[in-house]
Length: 223
Image (cartoon, rainbow, N blue to C red; front, top):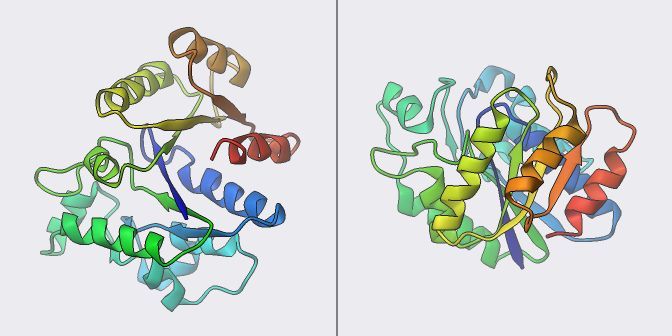
């Protein structure tokens, strides 16, 4: 079993899109794959079919039940806020050690590749003192950092890579998911990233369907 943690430079950056694409590609290639989305905010139980966990499970090509969602996402919160604030709204807390234990147990009982999708950006708080970065640091899993081509992405991405390096986290790849609107092209953005982090693998994920298969094939080869 190998586990890969999918994180991002911020929220709504494309983590679920990238993770779902990897699931489809790995399955098509005959590789065993499992997915976890342990913590999710902005979760509406009355519209759970549209949630990120449901979208991830749909990538397996099977019907999805609410019980399947609860299985891969035990910590679900309604408010679309950082996990610590969303939990506080409901008078709850996220037990950091339980999140770690959940991931480790799932990994130990699974064969193939386990994709663990985080929540929000890499520095978003989980509780009063721990962040997603702390979660990754304890698990010691390599990461796929998902970023975009939006204005501000250069600073956000290089900052995320800097804090990852300081924690000795293995960056398997940086997935650059093309943003809806951007002043710079996907190619220009990746070229700039490489000038500052040329030892890393950057994979461009275009918005258009053309080229997606090749992009996910390149990304899958890195995990």
